[in-house]
Amino acid sequence: MTFLAKRSIIKEDRSNIITLGAIAKEEKKKDPTVTNATIGMLYDEEGKLFAFKSVDKALNGLSLDEKYAYASTPGSKEFHEAVKSWVFREYYDLMKDNSKVMATPGGTGALSNTFANYLNEGDKALLPNYMWGNYKQCLYENNQSFDTYELFDNDGNFNILSLEEKMLESKKNQGRVLFVINDPCHNPTGYTMKDSEWDKVIDLMNEISADGTPVILLHDMAYIDYAKSGFEKTRFNISKYQKLNDNCLVVMAFSGSKTLALYGVRIGAQLAYSNNKEALEDFAKANKFSSRSKWSNPTNLGMNICIKALTDKEYKKSFEDELKEASKTLIERANIFLEEAKKVNLKTLPFECGFFITIPCLNPNLVYEKLVKKKVHIIPMGNVVRVTISAISKEECKKLPKLIKEAME
Ligand SMILES: Cc1ncc(COP(=O)(O)O)c(C=O)c1O
Image 1 (cartoon, protein in one colour):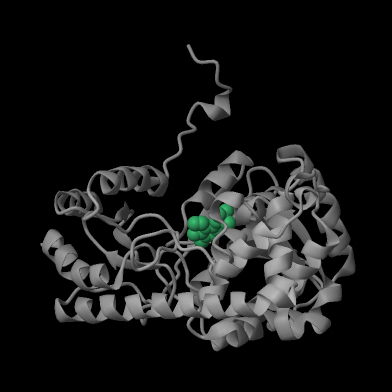
Image 2 (cartoon, rainbow, N blue to C red):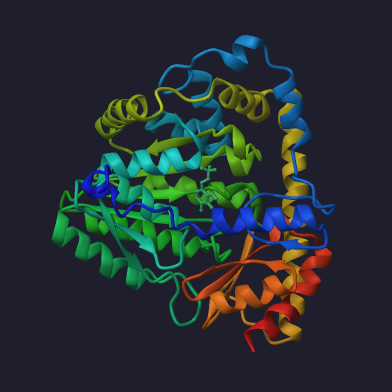
């Protein structure tokens, strides 16, 4: 007998990442020579969790009220403007009036709210075939499902034709299209779309929605501030949303976990952009309702840290400098890993930057088990293994490719 409701019987968190991450953490506690390349957090070269000094200082400067009082359901005006100004940067004046923000618990809250309010029950979201697996659980929780588009074409570029085919199918079958792009520093591959690929996505959205079909882009920008191309390029791509027609809506999922390394504080935001004012009013109404029903209100602590670190002159400059330094470290680790991978002929999926490097693999679980015996923990998923370079040192990046190659043979 089960007390669970019908839809809940099959619920089981299948996230390898959390489960295997916990095992790796335990192993490393017992033996510091273990390599833990599992969970998507940033660690320094000494293996300590990386925290931005400016963010920590901002937290320590908060009043009791700023830390512990209840917040309003959508979050404060100051937080909304902080997110807009951080994400839009030099395009803030141009884009602020066509956008609205909803504070959420991490990027996950932003993703979950967006699926809930822009797909009907039984509808499918379009996800890239390589993806952060929790999208699927968010969809199931909302009585929705998914289909996938191929992320890469044969040349390892963004597969716009596959996306187009799936968007047309969604349009035909459900009269609306909601698709997810996780860019830059895609999880798990590290792929980052080129300017011209973003142009094609914008054109496609305008084409498919030209007859009035609602087209919603859920832009998961969790790793936006770690792009190798820097702030200017990522914001230039965001500025292209100004070219969308009135039948398009973009909801960006901002993650305080990644941008500010505030993983456990659980702060993030939905940042909606549309050239259709009614769509923005609807966004504010429906997402406020969802937030109130699921978590009631966001963390005041998280919002106020963000406001200080992202807008206050005292903290912002040093935060940006620290962020650039952290991105530089990630790039150095990636370069070392890729150089060694080349030496041992270990192929990776197209990588540009970010927290992860992914290796196509016929038997990921077996490779995982063999590596654990050598005190190395990575994540097996589908037909790949994922290595979290944000969590390991340069020295470990140098050693790993050969060990992975051996485990695959
Ligand atoms: C691609 C991607 N999106 C969203 C998230 C959500 O992160 P959070 O809810 O901590 O902001 C993660 C976390 O690992 C992620 O990798």
